Image (cartoon, rainbow, N blue to C red):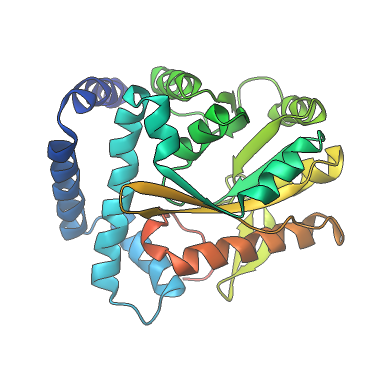
Length: 282
């Protein structure tokens, strides 16, 4: 019954939110974010704890409120993105160092982007497809299955191929095939879901991050480019960081991704949507 209720709630949101004026929806989602912070549930407490590590000198109350508003903005946009025109999706994106990505893609060997949970990676994926680089990615299988199917359909409408992390064909083999064909793979990679991740130092603390992007790069020869995102007014800003060199193996490559993530998150902590444990201490 609980799973059914969750699925119905998302179905209702996808129907209603896109029909309301954007100004009204923005007000409602900000109100919901502020109330969530005041309730100070487990997710908010974990978000505050993570931000304490990232920005120890910040006003944590204000930063947590900004971060929750950013997180709810992601959901607001998720419910409305399928109705945006192609011109709006592309026009509301700014980029930094985009030439790094385009040059790598033009070489024909495929490209891997590793991203953290910053701002709206669905918007970034839709932008990539509309500008000539259709995305293949992996998603954690949600419960109920009907809700997972909704998210697959949502991202497919945005032009993305989404492979389930579990319960289907080996996603690594499929992604490797896409890369060898010159494709573009994007993976959210700042949180380890397997508990078998690569140990890294992140903001001076021990953490673990998934090996997948680095392992795929070594397996296929496709360059690995970390990317970080943040909001600037109504726009999404995508920053592409230097290509991760393959020397040193998977562990060294994952640490270089972690360093790039820390650079982007440190500059825009309010857009880091990490409501789960990521640091091994605390």
